Every structure is written in structure tokens, then in C-alpha cells.
Amino acid sequence: MVEKVLRYINKYNMVEPGQGVVVGVSGGADSLALIHLLCQIRNRISISLYIAHVNHGLRGQEAVDDAEFVRAIAERWDLKFFLKEARVSELAKEWSLSEEQAGRRVRYDFFHSVLREVRGHKIALAHHSDDQAETIMHNIIRGTGLSGLSGMEPVRDGSIIRPLLCVSRGEIEDYCRQNGLEYREDRTNLDTIYTRNRIRGILIPLIEEQFNPNFSQSLLRMGDILGEDEEFLAKHAEKIFNSLARHGDNEVRFSIEGLKECPKAIRRRVLRRGLERLKKDLTNIGYVHIEALLRLIWDSQAGSRINLIEGLVARKDYEELVLYFDSAGCRQRPLPVPDFEYELDIPGVAIIPQLNLVITVEGIEPPRVLDQGDGCIYIDEEAIKNGLTVRNRRDGDRFRPLGMSGTKKLKDYFIDQKVPRDKRDSIALVVDEDNIIWVAGYRMSEDYRIKKDTKKVLKIEVKDLLHTTFRNGRCITWNETEKY
Image (cartoon, rainbow, N blue to C red; front, top):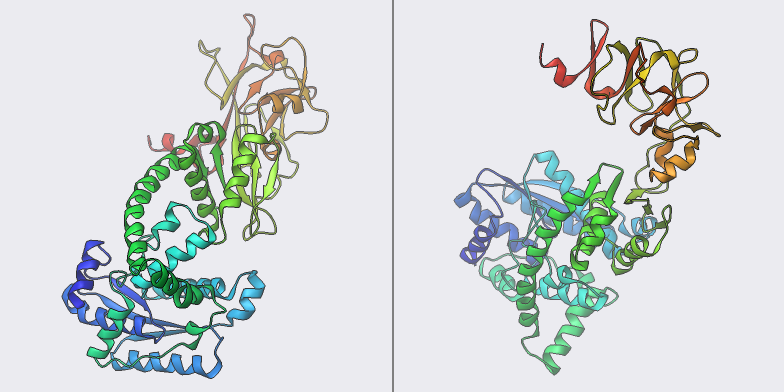
């Protein structure tokens, strides 16, 4: 079996020479066989091994004995041992999860923390082919898409590896007998209160007895075929996600027009990718959540929002679908921008720390070309009344957009420009005593445009503070700095 597992490891490039591997070891036959096999293999591919064990706090002294058993194995085989003691039943209530789901979260969080501590590269888990068949069947019962029908991946997220997916539970037990490996039996594996145990002990044996004696193999074969299809679709969806989405730690923004142009199969995957980007996993994300997002895109007005799960919220703006965590979720949305107001000298510089922006003013010779993009305007200095100020919006603001004969409420202008409500306080306004001169990044006022008889021209520019420095009283961007 060593050669079979080694071929499987090499087939999926699970580990490379010099890498550190954290092995989840419960003390049962599967995990004990895994760590024993990796010990045989490590001399051939030069890897470092670490044992991680979780006491879920569900089986009292029996669980304590399991931990000591695994600790003794680690000492006997000269491997570093890491132990996590948790109270999964309490955490399940706190997180509103089943004990199975809470236990899984505890295990994965612990394994990743150990991986960081040892500066390792991979986490090895002892799932085997029987587990794979149960997983696929479990997903069918719950309702699933192509990824669920594919089962567990041999390598997930580049760090989770499952070297035993190529062997059955029977092969593992034979391996343990042949190598004199005594293992612990977890009595909860026989408890039919758990869904997986009922699938393993009741459902699959019944189907194999009544319908297809090779049912488990049929499930595995289906999983392999559909897994290849899913891999192709997932890679394509990732490319589409990268082209449609703008994302940070607190939100993901999609182009609604771009989503609508996608085939539905890709659209669903792109949305799932956005949820995974924020939530870090897809636990408890199901069909109902994706359908709710699709209805929001197609059937809702701008400004509509829905609460998804665990503090995740989706909002439809004019041209974008926005996913984010609200204040009750795991992460906070950015705080509202407070009112601000700063004097702007002529010439001069105003720093707006609330927006990480810099507004600069300088007198110049009348330019031949006035349009320098959204970040810059040219105005008639003599039209200014009692100096310049930079602030954000106030109730009742109006201005006369360039090219219009009359004035317009700033609120109506933002609506016309499809500026989301939560972004409107983040837009700097350059004003004088009477009027809005420039809605920075959008439109200047008709009243301050340069005319044929204009004698003094001011250039007003907005820059990103994080990419700006100051030298000899001048405000310059980093790419300008490189010239010095």
C-alpha cells in the first residue's frame, strides 16, 4: 500500500522535498495508518512530519485517553505533538452549528494554527475512498451542485492534502494488521444520531444489498468524472470573477451588467467565489443564498439589500452588486465619513485625512487643452468669491453642472450619476462662499469655466494621499518622485 499511496501523492503533487506536513491524527485506524505511511515515505521524498490532535470534549475520559495514546505514538516515532482541547458542544450552540460542523471548524482552525507555528506547507488528513462515497451521498441528500457531486478534492486550497483517498477502509485495516498497528475505536462513529454514521452504517449498505452491490464504486467513479468537469468550470469562473469583481477585506463588488452577461452556471460560481472571498469558506452557503442573490440582481431596485448569513449582506447599487459584513457580522463595514471642512489656500494644499486625499491649487498659464481627466480641473480665478474650502456634502447643496443653464440639487446629480448612497459623503467638494465649484472626480461648475477673456487660471487637482509626498513645498506623486 506504500507504493499505491506514494503514486497517488505524486500524481497530485501533494508534497515536495523539504516541505513540512502537519498530520491530523485522531488515534483511529485511518489516521494511524496515514502517519505510519508518511513515516515510510518521508525518507524517499524528504519531508518533515508533525502530529496534531483535537480533543473535542465530547467523550470524557475516553477522549483524554485518545489524546494520551496519540501523544505516546508521537514520542515513540520522534514526532512533535500538538494538542487542542475544546468544548465543541458549547461552541456549536455559540456558533449556531451542529456538533459535526463546529468540530470541523475547530479542527481546521487548529491545524492551520499549527501549520503557521511550524512554518509548514501542508495539512494531511486521513479521508479514504469510503469517506469519499459517504460525502458524495451526503451531498446528494442535502441537495448539491457539481462540486458536491465531485466529493472531496485530493488537494484543496494548495494546503489540504488527502493521500488516502485512493484506498478503502478495508485496505487500511489490513495495513494496520500487517504492520502491528493498534488503534483506538471512537464509539461516536457508531452513533446513528450523526447523519454521516447513518449513511455509512444504514443507507449505503441498504442500497448495495437491494440495488447495486458496487454502489460505493459507482459513486466514486461519478465523482471522478464530474470532478474533472468541475475543475474546468471552476478555473473559468475564477477568470470571470477576476474580471468582474473588485474586492478588499470588507467587501466584494461585482459589475451587474457583467454578471447578467455570464451564463447562469458561471454566474452562480462567480457569486459563490465572492462569498467565499469574504467568508473564507462556503460553510452553510447553499442554493437558497445564491438564488437570493440572483433575485436581487434581476428583480430588485437600486438600494435593495438582503441579509444572507453570519452577518453577510448583499446590496444592489445602480451598477454594482455589493457583498459585505454588517456590524453584527464577523467584520465591520467601513465607518461613515464624518463631516469635514478645510480651507484651501491659493496656491496651496489641503489634506483630507478622512478620505486619504490631497487637493492642490496652483496658478498656471492658460492651457491649450483643459480636459485632464476626472482628477483635475481648470477654473477662472476671478470668479471665486472669498477664498476656497474643501468639504463634503450638506443638506440643500445645489450647483450648476458644466454645460447646464440651470442649477441642480447635488442629491439629484448623484442619483443621475448612480453614485451609491454610502459613497456620497466620501466625495470632496471644492466650494467658495456661494457655490460648489467642483464635485471632485465628477463635474465642475459652469459658473467657473475658463472664457476667452479669462486672465488668471487655477489648476485644481485631487490626488491619493497614500501615493503622495511633499518636497520643497510641492505636492508630488510617487511616480514623479522616481524622477529625482
